[in-house]
Length: 313
Image (cartoon, rainbow, N blue to C red; front, side, top):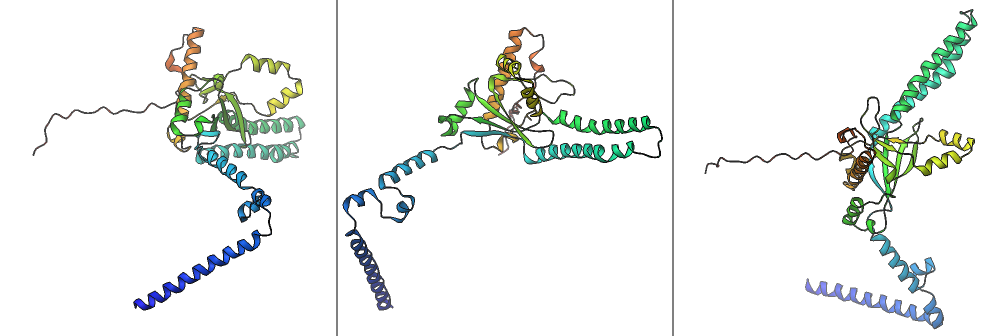
C-alpha cells in the first residue's frame, strides 16, 4: 500500500516540475523579443493588459478602490423609509380616485348631457356639471390629504461621516443648519417627487384638526424674492410641478430601522424641534411648547421594581 502511494506521489511531483519548467521556458522564449523599456512600460499579465494599465497605474487604481471601499455609507444616505406597504396603500387610493374622476368626466357626464329623455337643455347641463363636481371631490380630497405623505428621506453627508457609524452619529448630533435633505413624496397621480429642503427651513407644526402634516417648510426671504422675480409662465410651471411645503413623517423607530442607520433621523428631528421652539420663544408666541407635533417617540423606560422578599433556599 505504501509503495503505491509513493509511486503516485512521485508521478505528481514530476508533473508539477514539468509544468513549471515549461512555463518558465515559455516566458523566456517570449521575453527575448521584448525590449526592457517596453517591459517596464507595459504589463504582460492578462488582467493588466486587458485594462491597458501599467504596474504603477494598477497599484494606484487598487489604492483608490481600497480607499473607496473603506467608506461604509454612501454620500446620499437614506435615513427614513415609510415602507412599501404604506406607500402602496396610499398610491392605490390616489390612483383609484383619479380613475374615478376620469370615468365620470369621460363617460358619465357626456351621457347625462346628451340624455334624450330630458328635453330641457339647462337641466341636462346642470346634471352634467353636478356629476362632474361630485367626481372631482374624491380626487381633490385624496390629493390634499395625502400630499404631505413622505415615502423616503435622504441626506447628503460629508466624507468623514461615511467612514463609520460613530462619525455618522456625531454628524447627526452636530448637524449644521445648511444641511440638505431630500423628501420623496407622491404626486396627484402616484408618481414620486423629490423636494430638496435645507434644515434651517423646516419647522414642527402644531397639531390641528384636519391637518396631517407635522413638518413645514417656511418661506425664506430668498425664496420670496425668487418667486416675485419669476415670470408668469415660470410660476405656472412651478405650480404644475406640485411644490411641497408641508410634510408628514410618521414617528416610530421601525421606520428608521429599515434604513440600517437608526438614530440619525431622531437626532435631526430633535434639532428641528429645538429650532421650532426657539422661533416660538423669539416671536413671543403664547402657544405652549407641547402643542408642537411630536416627531420622535420617546423610549418607554419601565421602572425597576425593588425586590424586598428573599427567595427561599
